[in-house]
Length: 159
Image (tube, rainbow, N blue to C red; front, side, top):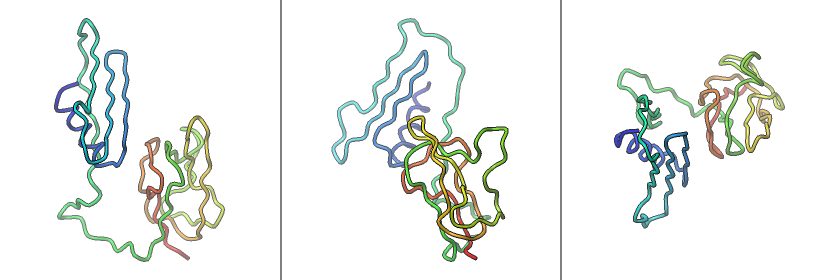
């Protein structure tokens, strides 16, 4: 992992609001912690193997900040939409398993109590039900990605 990759990881964590991230592979262990206003002397600890092994370059995906909009992208008025937010921290799944159909797609009509996704937390799979009736306008999270508490998951146009 290059210094640039590590810096991108640190930048991503500082923008995400996470306080601690641990990444461990067979050849590398990284622990990143954020401490309020006073930074610690060494916020990143990297433990490398005794004999350096060749590793393929694996880019770290860095999601674009939600406030950045491409100049050619038209602004969409979302003020009349209802946001379904994550009630917990975990991993977001759009279906029960990869072979199953997605719970909801853009354009689907939903009613109160309909399961819209699953969030896995500590090996428990929690069905997330809609608290509103309407039509799914946008899915804001990619399948099988981590989500935070109160993170927007779906935009719904109320009926």
